[in-house]
Length: 227
View (cartoon, helix red, strand yellow):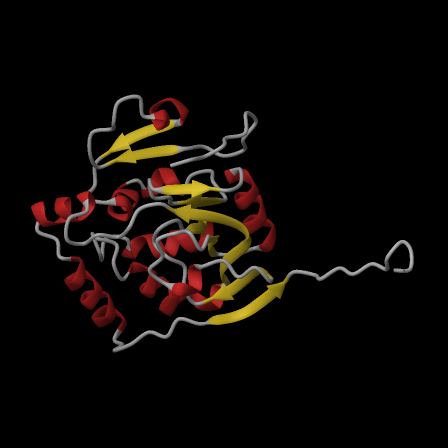
C-alpha cells in the first residue's frame, strides 16, 4: 500500500485489522483511530456505524493492497464537490481487475455508472446511513457492490478517471490469505454472491456506464507556420 499523506490533511484515518499487523506497519502511526473486530471490512464497519456517521461528510473504505497515484484528500474533495453518493478512483491498466468497467478511461474525467466495487468505495454520509444496514449480508464482501448498484444507481455512482489507483494483488480465492481466513470461519464467497442476488430478486446484473464527463481536447495554433 502506497499513500502520500498531506501534513495538513482534512480527513481522519481509521485502521481496522482482522489479523495481527505486520511489524512496523505504517498505519499504526498514521491512523487517528485503530480498531479490530468484526469478521471483515464491511461487517466491522457496521459495528462502527455510530462512529462512522458522526461528524463526517463521507467515508472511504479502502483495501490494504491499493497504491494511490494522488493524495487521498484530492479524491475526497473531488467527489464531495461533484456531489457523488458512491464513487471510486479508476484502476490503472497495470492493476489486477475483476471488472473491466473499473479500469481507467483516459478520455474521461469521470463516468457515472451503476457499479462501484467493494475494493475502495467512497460513501456520502447520506447514502452510508442507508447502505450500512446491508453491510453484513456478505461477510466475504462478494455481491455487496451489486446490491449497491441495484439499489442506489439513481443516487449518482461514479468511477473517477481523473484520479487513479493500482490494485497490486491478484484475487486468489483458492490460496489468498483472506480467503483462507474465510474458510476458517466457514464463509463461502460464492454462496455470499448467490445470496446477494437472491436478496435482490434478480438472476443477472448488467454493469453499465450511464453518463460520461469527457476531458477537453485543447488545440492551439502553432507559433509559426511550418516550413
